[in-house]
Image (cartoon, rainbow over all chains, first blue to last red; front, side, top):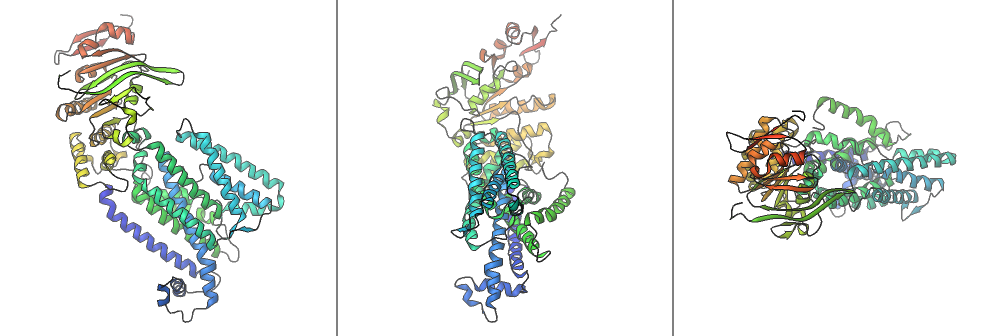
Length: 351
Length: 266
């Protein structure tokens, strides 16, 4: 079926996933150590909306519950949704741009840069906050931005960035940084646990400040990326052909690389390395939408967000009071489901 | 060439190096509208590089290639895509797109960023698919069609660009004889009915002689000979460029030259 004809069903799929996402967010806000019902959680959230919130009777809502939902659970839920959306969209873009099903948001080594930055901050014992954001997060962000600049400069030849060179440069540079992290761990035995847990990925340190920084980056990033959806379609059939079809291939590539890198850097800095989402969600969505990025990108964002919210809910409630790193949950629950999809549609995933 | 055919593309003293390797040397060539040109020559003689320079797939140097007397480097990619379409030798089609979606991509030079294809674009795509005889495949996934069909899909996409010139890099080299004829017939028809100019590189000299009006014989990065099939496909040229003795007869059906390569130890 062509995209034009599919548009209606794609819109339906998008609305449906958005509703599921909203339900997941409310469900997640109602789940936890403190016993708050689904209805109550919904009322607390609606009540906090400016203006319209006044219409919802606050009545029997306990301020303590209100605090738990609004200031502890909700920022974490929104943050995980943003991370999920950002990583999934970036994964979809990189797979299309590199014409490689194995590409994921971390393939350019950005995650290793973030790990190294975070490890340095942890090893130096920099535990205080800067403008409401942990200094570890700031270091991780600096680490990923520097990595991004290095990898890009290594791969650039005469103003062009050949995909293969970029991929290899990213992988090689990533390995180098990862080994530096290992060495740092050896020399800072006391901090090993902290570093390992940071790398495993978690959104447990979420705050509204982080949400306020991450939201504009992820949202604007996804909008910019979606604007290039048709160009991405054409580029996924070959860069040479894309050029002759009027796509400014190098310009589009640079712009997308920049936007993707900033999204990944921001996501990784607040959450550590959450694997699987950025690799598998785009493939799972592709089974529904096909390869057309105009459907794939928006749907990946919503499905990725929902998946992360669900995983994080499990991560913090599965075996209380212990928290399982959400990075482990994404793979434990996601991989079997994806294998099931793969088995069902054996040939459909990549041509 | 016909008197009323306009000068469309002119290449003036084009050199091209890949690093140290000189691939094109002082190539000068005029291509007129509505012609069917075949670029022939041994492997490595610079056929593809020449096509890539004209299509600007490579970063063409300034002041070397002109389209309607305007330097090709001055065009934006979108502007150029409305004038020149290009069918590369290998097209990566691993992703899941329907044949119609692929052909509709040909309309993208005419669309704004968030604009969706209109029924007008759909009409042009439909026409392109009918001309190339792939209309019946329109709902099929591109991964499911045969090599000959896929080549026609890519040609249909180029056709949907509604450009004046279509450049094709060895469009038939990977196809069986039946599909070769099919593609060449389509291209011939396009030059006749749609006033399209076709420039293709091709290895099969007999096919080239049968279908092309003008042949450009390349040798080691230079144009060795340019002219009608009778002027280019002659024993002397073949011996000097291909290092091959050949017997050339007149095809009794088409009157075009027909080449029979001879064994080295005859």
